[in-house]
Amino acid sequence: MAQSEMSQRDAFLSELYERGKIDRDVVLISADMGAPALDLIRRNLPGQFYNAGISEQNAILVAAGLALEGKKAFTFAIASFITVNCLEKIRVQMSIMKLPVQIIGVGGGFSYADSGPTHHGIEDVAVMRAFPNIEILNVSSSVNAEAAAKYVLEHPKTPRYIRLDREVLPHVPGESEMNFSTGFRYLRKTRSLKALLVTGNLVAKVPEIMKANKELNIIEVARLDKVHESLRKELQPFSHVICLEEHFKNGGLGTLIAETVVDWNLKCAVKRMALNMEGGYTYKYGGREILRSDLGLNIAEFFEEVMA
Image (cartoon, rainbow, N blue to C red; front, side):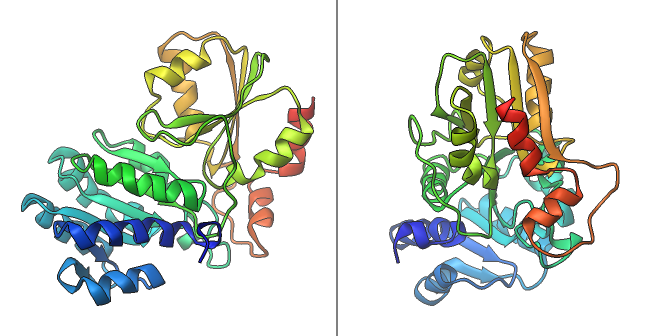
């Protein structure tokens, strides 16, 4: 299967499988999930695969124990369950004890649009950002999922949350490929003093945005735990920054950039385009665009915004 046709999940797990064949310290703990790439690990590397059952908290604890023994431990489950459902375990084992557990969460944003608010990953980044010592990678395509897996395997001593989307989304070419150490890349660089910062599944909208506005700087941000010094320097000349994400407005990319602007006394105005929290969760069905619109993230209105 061509990589462009693979899910982010299979791209990430395939890289994990290839590395696991030569490094027996790579282990995966699944919370009873299924996937073609997962089956390769289960079938061909049985001593490196564990099924914790529908028990995400236990998966974190098992991974923490294996990490204590020197293993490169990955957990794998639906994003909202492996984060929000496990907060106390993540706080103690990953943040306080700094054990290098790698959380793979599939289903950022409205990936599971047909499954109701229990499956929506729209506050996961906010709660994970509350914990020190945990990196947060927000992946936008299968190409970047493979790159994220390589980055994680090359830097295994840091606790992480890797946020994957369920849909197969196109890879958007840019000025360079993603560098997960700095956590950003330019998709288009211009002389404008305005910039769009976009993360995760909404990077797929960038080709349309480029057509709607020929001048806007466009930057993909994939690290949501902090703003790297090199990105902070890039933000300094801008007068206006728009942040676009499929996450509650509080605690996600927009909040991270607003905090950076305040903490470093940058002079740019920040506009956050995300999901409004005022009405709480959405119980609607009908697809991703319907759910986005129900919480105030109207993509048509956004295009009017960038064209202004």
